[in-house]
Amino acid sequence: MKATGSYITKEKKQELELELVNLKGPKRKEIIESLEYAKSLGDLSENAEYHQTREDQGKLEARIAQIEQILQNSEVISRAGGEIVDIGSFVTMQKEGGKGEKTYQVVGALEADTVSGKISNLSPIGLAMFGKKKGDKISFKTPSGETVNYKITKVF
Image (tube, rainbow, N blue to C red; front, side, top):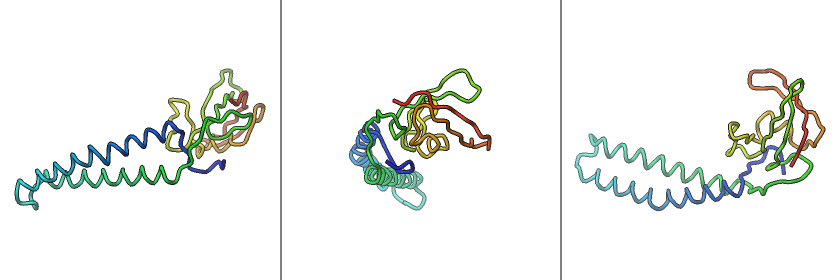
């Protein structure tokens, strides 16, 4: 896999597929019914409900297109489990001069969530650790411009 590709996990793919089914089915039907009702209220030029529903419809269709594009253009990854950092790998690292260790999972940009320990493959740290192995040192710049150094202590 390339460090800069577009990737999603099997779980994220399933989540997006379920959302797509809901948006194309019940949500789309709900908006069509709302539009019909709003049209029945009369003069469309001053019908706020109609205009709001049309805006909602536009957002719905944009989200459907976005999900379809993601599903079409993203590579589904299975959990990696080798010695080299790849998409799906869990990586334990220690900051240079620090005492504790942190474990992250390298995921596609769509699933990145630093609070949950999921680091985007496109983030500075994700790019720095990609292709490395246990014992390697990495260095990258934070968004604030500070250079930080870590040692990879475990890849699983």
